Image (tube, rainbow, N blue to C red; front, side):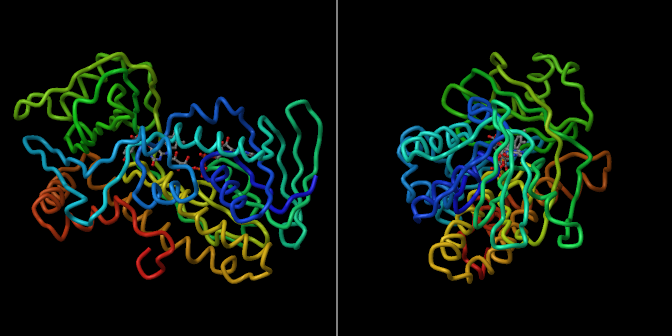
Amino acid sequence: MRTQVVIIGAGPAGMLLSHLLDLGGVDSVVLETRSRAYVESRIRAGILEASTVELLEASGLGERLRRDGVPHRGVDLQWPGERHHLDFVDLVGRGVWIYGQTEVQKDLGVARDAAGQEIHYEVADVRLHDLESERPYVTFTDAGGGRHRVDADAVAGCDGSFGVSRAAVPAAAKTTWERTYPYSWLGVLADVAPSTDELIYAWHPDGFALHSMRSDKVSRLYLQVANGTDINGWSDQRIWDALATRLGHGQDGWTLTPGPITDKSVLPMRSLVMAPMRHGRLFLAGDAAHIVPPTGAKGLNLAVADVALLAPALAGLLRDNDPRLADAYSDTALRRVWRSTHFSWWMTTMLHALDDPFDAQLQLSQLRWVAASTAAATGLAENYTGLPIGDSLRD
Ligand code: FAD
Ligand code: PHB
């Protein structure tokens, strides 16, 4: 096989990259280890930044998003006895959208089908070769056991946090920064109307809680739990009781309505950045290059921002023989990655309880400051709603 770009991974980064490359007249082949059904039903992110929505719309992916997505003006910050609404639209002139990663993934699948995109699902033993040459190639085993080779001009590593692409960059050619956090999230999906119009981020001495949603009938909720937590120790009743306590059930007449839980999982929390995001003709995008804890709702949005920069960079390199954007790709993307890495770390450390009374007072002081100061609230709003993609002065 021969193509211009082999894309490793059919998650949001890989699928959107194939879409944007196609719009720019560049051919690609996508390789994915999982089945299409699995990829399209993985429950992950739920918040889209304004710039993500603009990009999806501008590239013809906005129809269902406009119809079924729900615009939110802001979020609530909560701690015992207090709840404050931050109105992002008032503060920075833009909000965010509720639209699940599963839906983004399905929209991408439909668009790529319509364009006749070549995607190989359920492949195995993907290996990257000759990345430092101008003729890299990738080998893989297809679902039927046949071994293949794809020759290309570039390889895009969009294979997430446990893929092969990051590992394909030699240790001497990369720097990695990493932080693991001393807590995890227990996430649940429930068939119940959300008890709130907009998200509630709650600090509580028992631990952080988040009330999010997927639609007017489906709620998504999270609880801070200890690392290594066994999900079997958390019955539905225990989960709803903890959510009620931490989210302030009864406070100023607000109530949390429980309902049937349809999905339950424990997610560890990690920050990781690898630089540079390029090695020879291998370009990394999304979770393959960086991971953020979910508190800032940034993972999916960062993956979108990366490929928004990478698609024109690859088109310049391969279609127009102009390497300038490709040469600038890693530095440009990393400025935004570090901004989101800091913001996600800041939200995480401000909201998660540690067994330390001094830290607790500092966290509460920060929360009161964000709620009371327009300057502080504007900083949170500017980061949460997302900085413009490719604005090198600010991103
Ligand atoms: P991925 O979505 O991980 O896609 C990578 C793809 O590559 C996968 O389909 C994988 O199967 C495939 N792959 C892996 N190895 C190979 C290989 N060797 N060859 C070929 N294909 C391969 N972010 C938020 O903002 N909010 C959230 O609530 C949130 N929740 C999350 C929950 C979980 C359990 C996880 C794992 C992540 C969550 N995230 C969340 C992060 C967000 O989902 C990711 O940042 C986003 O999916 C990144 O997209 P991606 O395309 O870079 O990577
Ligand atoms: C979600 O809806 O899954 C979600 C929302 C906001 C976050 C994290 C996850 O910060």
